[in-house]
Length: 161
Image 1 (tube, rainbow, N blue to C red):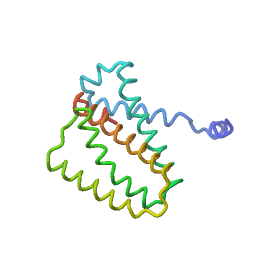
Image 2: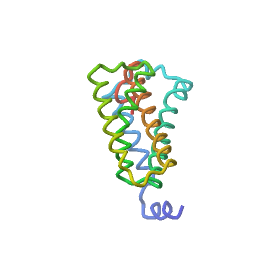
Image 3: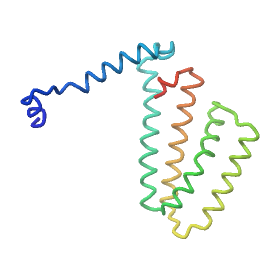
Image 4: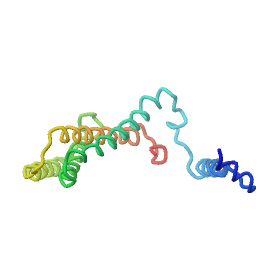
């Protein structure tokens, strides 16, 4: 309150961010029209899809940062290199996208490289490894759901943000 009062005493207006938000909304409507899918969005659809994506993103951040408590930075980075493998598997299991043979072989090569790089970890902690598995699963869930929203439900890139 004290900061707002001092702005008012100087003659400054506090509602500048609100004005910028209104201008951004007007600009978005003028230059980026909403898709038909976005116009027909209900609160139930929003809760079932968008909130889940947000929760997956939050848990990915939480678990990803918690992994650094138990594991070395280099080992966490090795495990994060395994995330595309989990994403491709998630896309296949969710029937969003089937990988080609070339993609499957690339993912297999990345998986084997991650396994061989992980064998040399001197300070392996099982609790940290499990936390990082949760982080990778959360990140893959977020990416799969976002892909489903953007491609299968025909959302535009702007609505996907």
